[in-house]
Length: 164
Image (cartoon, rainbow, N blue to C red; front, side, top):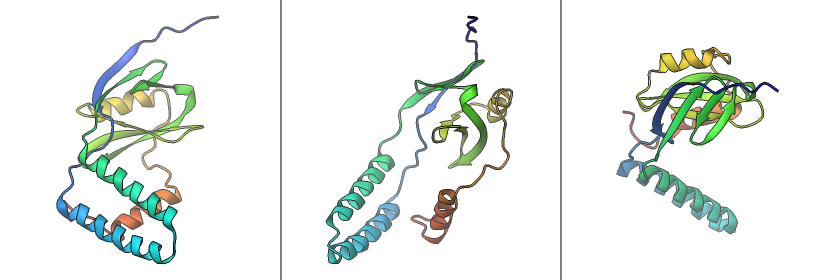
C-alpha cells in the first residue's frame, strides 16, 4: 500500500470563533426580550422551557464577553487541519468565503457533517481560496438553507444593536 507523504502548503493561527465586544444596549435588548418571554412562559407553566431560555442567554453572555482562544490551521496536500481536527479533501463537498465583522472566514461543507468555519486572521483570503480550490469546488454564492434565511430575516427585523 502506497502511503502519501503529507506536505504543508500553508499554516496560520487565528481566533477559534468570531468575536465582537458587545455594548450595554445589546445586553439590555436581550434582557428585555428574555424578560417578556419568561413572563409569557410562567403564565403558560412552561418551566423547563424557561430553564432552556435562561441557559441560552447565559451562553450568549459568555460568548459575548470571553475572547476566543488562538488556534492553528494548516492546509496540506491531504486536507485541512483546523484546531486539531483533520478534514481530508475526499470528505469535503465544496467551500466558500464570507466576511463578517471585518474578518474573512472559509466555510467548508463536508458531505456527512455540519459546516466547518475557519477564520483566516491576517492570512490573505485569495491565496487560501486558490490553495483549497485546487482540491475541492469553490462556490461564489453558497446554497442558503431555511435556517440561513430565517436567521437573516430575524436579524433584519429585530436588531439587537445599532448598525456599525
